[in-house]
Amino acid sequence: MDDIWDLVVVGGGPAGSAAALRARQLRPDARVLLLDKADFPRDKACGDGIAAHGHDELALLGLPDLIADHRPTRRLSIVSPGGAQVSATVARPNHVVPRAVFDARLVEAARERGVEVRRHRVRALAVRHGHVVLDGTVTARAVVGADGANSVVRRLIGMPASPGRHTAIAVRGYADVPLDDDVQRIVMQGEGWPAYAWSFPVGDGSANVGFGMLLPRLRATGLPGRRVLHDRLAELLPHLPARDLRAHHLPLSPGRPGAGAGRVMLAGDAAGLINPLTGEGIYYALLSGRLAGEAAVEAPDDPLPRYRGELGRALGRHLRTTDALALAARSPRFIDAAIGVAARRREVFDLLVEVGLGAGTVPPSLLFAVARRWLGEAVRGA
Ligand SMILES: Cc1cc2nc3c(=O)[nH]c(=O)nc-3n(C[C@H](O)[C@H](O)[C@H](O)COP(=O)(O)OP(=O)(O)OC[C@H]3O[C@@H](n4cnc5c(N)ncnc54)[C@H](O)[C@@H]3O)c2cc1C
Image (cartoon, rainbow, N blue to C red; front, side):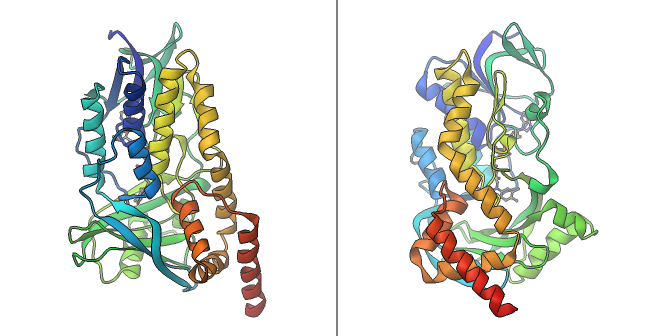
């Protein structure tokens, strides 16, 4: 059996790497082990969009230049289910970095900071003498479960998986685009709403393209899932034939994250931290991973309450906001109204971006403006 590790992190995606990096950043002598079932670089089905807030997280982790060699993307264009359009420059640029590159850089940075990285698929978890024992061989004072949407750690601590109504599924691929294409495009679809396609140019003549929808809506079609996803993507972005198509589930935030149990903290997708309005999860993965790593070394006797508290302070109001908005957004007309208002009012566009990609909340005055337009259109429609 190994010695006792201060922290064992399961999963080397953004959440897991952030946890490991933060623990060593705060306590350079901490014994930190990062386990992943894959060798890096590895691909991950994702839109590869890294929001400005995610970039801030990299700086907090001491890696401000990790993606500095990738071109920032400044323009965002959205078409709503009913055809309302907005196209504008975002207040702070986003980045598009293929996950095979981004995640490998994070893991390498963790290794350079003294984290031990091992290829290992976790299958079992037990609690012995106040420690967590993984697969009977790895003993830890604290564990961060950052093993993604189908988290084994989450299941092993007895927490149910994300329910179907809070789960989306999306396919992504890559397509050729002009080198100078720097607009992130989102095209929403009324059929089977909420559903949308995206095109996120990487900056190297390719773009990450994809299509996602709620799992119950996909099942309701009665058709093979792969066919629906591939066909809708081709329908919405006919000029961008995609290669390397790959799909994955997205556990959408139900408003309250499942923070963990005992000495095990969950971060990122394992905690169900994906924005239900946009499918954005990298920022929340980096943030929650950082907070979990912090709790593991700063409150080693009982890290979970500290983690839960910090996560609530950082994201609590935001997650409740996105949960409420996701409910309202079940009506495509609500989104039509919101995009319509955003096209006319700059501050509303900025706020939509904050709520969709960051930690923003919505002031009542704005909700009122959108509701008024929504009602107005409903009355006109009637
Ligand atoms: C098609 C699609 C498009 C998306 N687009 C975007 C986007 O553009 N922007 C955005 O911000 N978010 C996007 N997301 C969401 C984003 O991909 C996730 O929120 C993000 O990857 C979560 O990071 P994570 O570290 O929690 O998990 P992951 O990135 O999934 O990492 C989990 C890691 O755990 C490892 N692992 C799993 N099980 C075990 C085990 N038993 N033992 C050891 N290791 C294990 C895996 O190998 C993996 O490396 C998208 C998701 C999908 C599916």
